[in-house]
Structure formats: C-alpha cells, structure tokens
Length: 343
Image 1: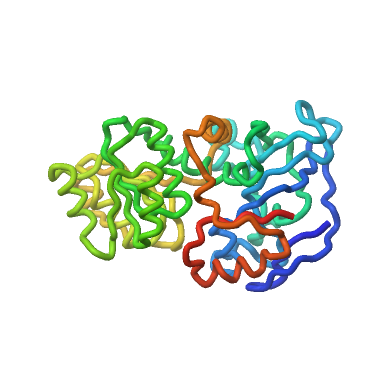
Image 2 (image 1 turned 180 degrees about the vertical axis):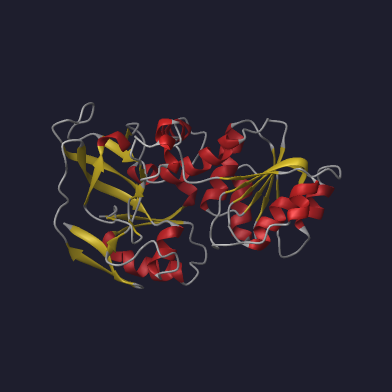
C-alpha cells in the first residue's frame, strides 16, 4: 500500500509499505480522507516527541471497511466509517468508570512516543479495533467526516461544564478547535460569545460561525474589554484553545468571580498561571483531553447541519502532495485552516 512516512524529522515521502494485518476483532479500513492535525505538524519537526520516526502519522480519518475479522459484529465490508483516534483498553479503572480518554494503557493512531508505535491513516489502509468504529450518515462526505475527531474534542470540552444559554462566554483562539467550540456553543443555544484571535481571517470565520463579538488580542487588553462588554462582571466561562501563556492569562482574567476556564490547547508544555486570580476569585480551571466517545453527538451535529465544516477546509489534496502541505503548514500556513489528504 501507499503511505506517507515520516522517515526522519522534517522529511516525509510516499513509500510502499505492507498492508496492515488485522486480528479477529479488528477491521481493515480503506482510508478515503485524513486531515492534517496541528499535532502532526508539530510532530513533523520533533517538537512534541510523540512522532518518533519512522511513523505514518494521521488520526483524523474516514473511509470504508475493506475487511473484517471473524469476531467483528455489526460491521461489514463496504460500510462507511470513522473511528476514534484514541484506542483505549476497556479494562482499566478509568475505562470502567467511563473515562476512556484517560485510559492507563491508551494508544493513539499516528503516534510513536517511545512507549509504543501505532501507524496512522496517512496511508491507503489502516487497521482499527472494531470497538472504535462509528458508522457515517450516508449523506456525509468523507472529507467532512474526517473532521469528526476534531469536532468530538470540542464537544467534549464544552460538555465538561455545560453552559447555560444565557451565559457569556469567551473563546480564546480561533483555530480549528476554537471555531468548532463556537459552533458547539451555538448549537447549545449560547449567543453571547466573544471570540479572541490575532488573525483577522480567523476572527472573520468566528463571526461567520456564531461569535457575537471578536477581539484582536494585539490591539487591546482583552480582559478589560470583556469586562466592559459584560457590565464590568466578566464572562461566565472561557475556553482556551491555544495553549500558550498569553492566551491562558487572557482566558483566566476574562472570567467573573466563580467563573470556569476550560483549557484545551497544549501548544506549549508549560505555561504561567495567575494563581492569585484563580484562588482569590475561586475560579474553576478544567483540563480537557481529546474526547471521550462523543462521536455520536458529533455526527449528529454534522448530520443535521448544526455544525458546518466545509468553510474550514482549505484544500483537499492527494497523498502525494502531503510533503509540500506539511512544509507550508510548518512555515506558518498563512490562510490555511485544514488540509485533507486523500490516499
């Protein structure tokens, strides 16, 4: 099969690899579309330490079942599917408690971190445990289905402390996840959404997808502006979707006393946290990790048009163009939101 292999850091090439073998409880998925995630771009240059070469990256995928193991029930060859990017064991204490995103033995597609190597979906085929599969609505294009993984991250984050429709909310960072968070909030009935980003094109997308107000963090003191727009009180909740100190600071300082801050971004391994703001104002700070089986809700949101992803897809390209797209994204990717590769 063809696969886009990271053979060394900053070097990708399309190579021939053996088609993955499947076990009795697995399926072989013919990949129809796979999105380039920011984590793949940072893995490409070795920044994260979680894409140790050689590795086939890619975890935002959709496709059709090519073959199914003998013990697979409910899925058959030809079925249109997507799959959870995280493979949980189903047996540890976290899995038994329904928190499989925190599984003690979890692995992830397209990750090689020293403890394990699991090839991903920048390839013609990928082997997937059948328990991780989700059937696609007939009308959902493969390219849109490839973004279900990212949407599930947003659904999970919003669901950790579900907002009331009347809540005022700040979303810091209007990349892919931030824009999906805005749409999920709107689907929940929230209207008072303030979106914050440095990029004018992303702020424009935030407005198009439901933000009532957008703020340029380079042109103002964001917390002061948020208070001015919330009668001096501050927002009820903030979602931080970048993962660097200035964005975290802005999110924490934008919420009211007793407010909630949900941290989704993890661009930097460590950030500063304004402890006096957190402690003296009794803020709740939540960390949001990946998703926890929110794929059905995500597919429902896409299926009924409550969330739209077409405007977020910048390009759909053949797998052979993967190296040049990675180079462009790594160098800043001006104007690029999401690139989908098709094997």
